[in-house]
Image (cartoon, rainbow over all chains, first blue to last red):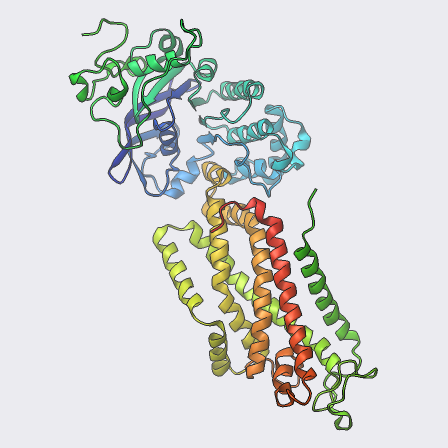
Length: 317
Length: 272
């Protein structure tokens, strides 16, 4: 299996505040990888730096490479990036209500997506638009509709169709179903997985919903405080977490606790750039000791490993 | 579903009537507006001359009717000039990086700080007083307010996810400006156009009054006011009729602008 996305040592900072530090990440063709973590853990920034759409004063360092693109993506100029975006990398955003231009018909927006990279002629672009709508199970008449005539779920399906328009080798979904209700969520997730499988594209799926990760992804990376703290196959992570943060995250989503009370991780996520030195989780960790003031080494391989001085599953030292 | 707001209706009706008056004046006026008849100077309003006559015996109603053409023409051209320059500037400054954007907006502020009438008088002095110089000067003076309003609207559109999505789809900045930003600020353009129109009407009247606007014999409301000065006590009606016409026109366009703004506003949450 060839690697579609290879991220090495990715760091994102605004002035001297580090927002994401030293992220390594690979996604192979046809592989579905999840990126989970609380708000403010740096998931979305990681995604935006891969596609090169960070806000103006935010800087990325490190290396991002995508199969089929002959150059480094970090620091690539706007002109080169706009050729990559939408063709090699596509992205689905969180908010379906605002992700479509209210003044353009759905068909025109779909056709535009194909015309940007001239993957289709003008005439076949409209036919292509209908095909894309079929793919996301919307009726062909939708091409004449304006976004306000569609529901949130329908719009998110249009957004997905837009992202798949040019058969990207990498699809990034940033919390695509967070704004949708549960029944619609299942359909959209199913369409995402099918769209990715049919194209043998790589999927990077960002969410804070563990249940969604379990249905969609094969492998998962847990982010906290701008760092990847643990990674591994979904089954492993969910049954035998090693990092104390992952452990807390899973406990918090467990509804079957003994005393019928929800377990929470003590404290709150610190504001960006104010995470403790060393292990970023140590100020909220029950197991933290003096050694945690040093940044923990990565233990294991990239596809299964963690960064913790006192991992779960062994006796506390 | 949508309630018609009173200012939109009243403003729309006033503007409609002025446009109608201007159109009718092309095919019919009670008298030739420029016809000088010394025998019937300074007549009081009567059945044959509803608004009376001026010092040259010209029919005041006919002059008001023909004058509305000048008013509308000046307004349309001035607003056109302002929009054609101001809208792209506003969108551009919302899309470029920080310091070029600052440069555009500071230059804009400079022009904004310059009194519009003074600019128009300067233009008149340099290029000669004519309707054209008045229109262009008023237009240029209205550019800053256009640029400012459109910039704030465009900044808001630039923050939306569909612009981010368009960039994520590989759209270049220029097509984004034309296909995504411009269509979504048209409501702002409409509102600003009608407000600027009111200002242009007033500015044209002021310029004509000062002798830098429409030269004689083309009837203009501002010049009618100026010519009425010497009869302010003996025949105040000569000042009242064009004055009321100017006031109504300005009111009409302002109301229309307010009404349109109320109509569109729910879409624009945090306009600066």
